[in-house]
Structures are given as structure tokens and as C-alpha cells.
Length: 465
Ligand SMILES: Cc1cc2nc3c(=O)[nH]c(=O)nc-3n(C[C@H](O)[C@H](O)[C@H](O)COP(=O)(O)OP(=O)(O)OC[C@H]3O[C@@H](n4cnc5c(N)ncnc54)[C@H](O)[C@@H]3O)c2cc1C
Image: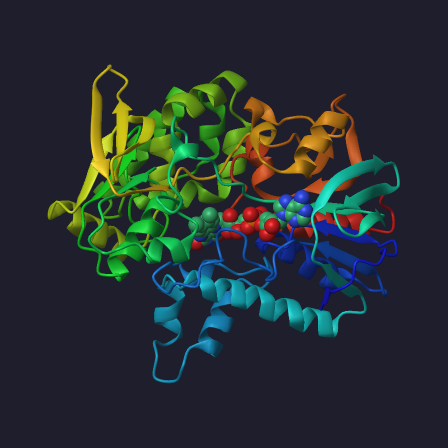
């Protein structure tokens, strides 16, 4: 299916930049919505589609953070992923009801997207060409764009969906670039984490979901050595809990300032508990309103949120399977997992070990020696510091501008990219994490599938500009 030659590419109706989950969702929408033999091109440097950093893991211990019943690729077929899971679970395994609530292996999600993509290619009047390449430059035009691919040269496209996704952050420490080969690992290098010696002393930098992946891999390996977790707040992700959503009306939240909203949510959590519901029911209630809540906040309150509230928000919002949380707690209780609050200063070679030095906000310093460090600091949010040549090109030429608070790129409400002068690019849509600054909730599958549907509908509409 992927083009194996570097011949020039004929013009296309739609170019999708990036073949991670977001790009594949956009391709499926285009194949589904097409009523004529459109030409769609998806450009992705990786060999395998629908992976990106989230679904590239081949390890069974890495599970989705959301139950299967809520991971469909399509708004109008809410149980589609569950159908796939049921159909691909061996006979004698859990039944549909149990699978609906289960946290399925992430590798099965990539399989699901690829399966559906192939089905849609077979059923659509449109054609999809997958080009293994990278888009390094883009020239926006009123009637589309010219993409410049590293190996294939120029590609004319009548419409573009940019789904370039997540860029991991480098380790934020002096000394990190000088560390010996193999001693400093990225959390997303799943195989390297899995290959660590089981008696090694490991320090994971960051305490979010990538840290959880790393600890799960170490535990799956029978790791016996101490595992340090360092983060500025030392907060761990909290668990999901069955119990559904609370029933309060979230609309009044939008009229409140940040302080008022936090007060409202604390009160709602107390009420939920009094009603016999877990506090998680409050987060479930406001989950579909995440974008509206962000967009109704003043710029100053958004800034305060990013400075003072975001980490608390993350651990309540991005929860983990209860059994995964229980496993982390057991490791903490027996002292194998050690949580450090502090900001990383340096990681230096110290004989045959690595010395990690940190400081806290109140000026206390700490240092300890380990055998390996694992960078689990997550994804880069600022477009200007992402190591993606396409973003530098777009910003440099003024085809795009940074998003609010410097996060991602600025997009109109429907996802169209906005240039440096504030003009909307009529034929270029942005999808996924690059829109976090504008809408906040913009990385999980429910948001990606909605954005993909809108972008493709607008670009393929016969009345579109
Ligand atoms: C560890 C982890 C677990 C997650 N778990 C869940 C979950 O349980 N439930 C949920 O709903 N969400 C989850 N998410 C969030 C979400 O589903 C993912 O972030 C999603 O994979 C994002 O897809 P994407 O296509 O936007 O970005 P990515 O997956 O990052 O894909 C972007 C693709 O674009 C390509 N690319 C980049 N630049 C260029 C270029 N210039 N030219 C061509 N190609 C380019 C890259 O090679 C990459 O393949 C998780 C995320 C992570 C990181």
C-alpha cells in the first residue's frame, strides 16, 4: 500500500500529514465521506500506520486509559471498538459486558484502526496512497497548498489535514546529552526499558502516564531494583472508578472565574460522595465540556491554570485503570518505588553510576546515584521548540502562528490554521495536540475523531472555498 519509489506524486484532493491515530482517523473519514473517486495521500515516515507514540507499544502490559466502550473511531458508531475487541477476543475469553469495561492492551487499538482503514479502502470510491516520507515544508495557497516532501519533492493538494501529533520532550537536565550510550532512555523506547537489568537502580523523570508505562514494563520484567520517580509535584495519576457520571448541570461553571470553578468542583465532589458516588463521577460529568470550559476562561485564568492547577487537573482527568493504580501503590508501600518531589538539575556520570541532582521550590537540594535514567517528561507543547521541520517552516514563513500561551498552533474554532497576520488558511486544518492551546482537550480519541470528521467534511464539501 505504501509507495516504494520516489517518483513525483500527482496532485491530490486531500493530503494528510502524519499517519498516527489522528491521521488514520482523518483518512477513514475521507474514505467514508467520499462519493466520487477522490485522490487522498497520507504522508508518514514510519513503516506502520496508526502507531505514533501511543499505540506503537508491542507490550501487553501497556493498556488504554479508557474502557473499551469509549474508544470508538466513529461518533456515530460508539461501540465500534468494542465490536472489534469482541470479534478478536479468543473464544472462552471475557464476554462483551466485561470487555466494555476493560482497559484493553494499547497495541490492539492500533490493530483496530488499521483493520478499519483497510475495510474502508476496499469499500470507498476514493483511493488512498500512503507515502513513506516526511513533509518538511508547506506553501499555503488560496486553493490548497504545495507540500514539499523530503524524498518525493512537491505535492499539490486541494486540501490539507495536519496531524503531526506528539513530539517527546528532551530530558531537561544539564549533563544529559553527555551521558553514555544506553544509560539515558526515553520512556517511549519500550523495548529498551524492557531490556533493563532487573537489579538496576532506575530513576524515572516525570510522574505521569509515561512513568506508569515504564513502571508497568519494569514490573512485568520482574524488576527487583529500586525505582525512583522524580517530579516537581510528586503527584501520581489517580484511578478510574466505576459509578458513572454525576448529574449536576455543568453550564453555570462557564460563567465563573477559575477560583469559582475550583470551588464549584470541590463542592460537587463532596456532594457526589454524599450521594454514594465516587469523586470521579464529577470528572465524568464535565469530561464532554472540557473544550467549552477552556474557551470560556479568561486569558489570565488560563495562565493561572497552566501555572498553578494543571498538574492537579492532569492527575484527576487522565486517570489509570484501578488495577494499575493498585500495583503502583503496592510498589510504593513496599518501598521499591520511591517518589521524590523536586526539579531536575543535572544528570552526570559518576564513576559507573549516574548522579541525579535536584532542588525543590523552597530551596532544598537532593542528590542520589542510579544506574539508568528514563525520560518520562511527556510531550512538547510549544510548537517553536518541537523538533519538527514542518512546524519551523510554517512559523518561519508566517503561514502559522503559535497558539495561545505559546502552545501548539493557532487555529480557528473549526480547526483551520491561522497565519501570522490572523487570516484563516481556508484549506489547511490542524488536528490533535497542536490545538491544545486553543481548545485544551485535544489529544484523546473522542476529540481526534470529531476533529477529523469536521476537517474532512469541510474540505470535501462542494461549496467549500
Ligand atoms: C502513552 C499514551 C497513551 C495514551 N492512551 C490513550 C487512551 O487510552 N485513550 C485515548 O483516548 N487517548 C490516549 N492517548 C492520546 C491519543 O490517543 C494519542 O496521543 C494519539 O495517538 C495522538 O495521535 P496523533 O496522530 O495526533 O499523533 P501521533 O500519534 O504523535 O502521530 C503523529 C504522526 O505524524 C507523523 N509526523 C510528524 N511530523 C511529520 C511530518 N513533518 N511529515 C510526515 N509525518 C509526520 C509522525 O511520524 C507520527 O506517526 C494516549 C497517548 C499517549 C502518549
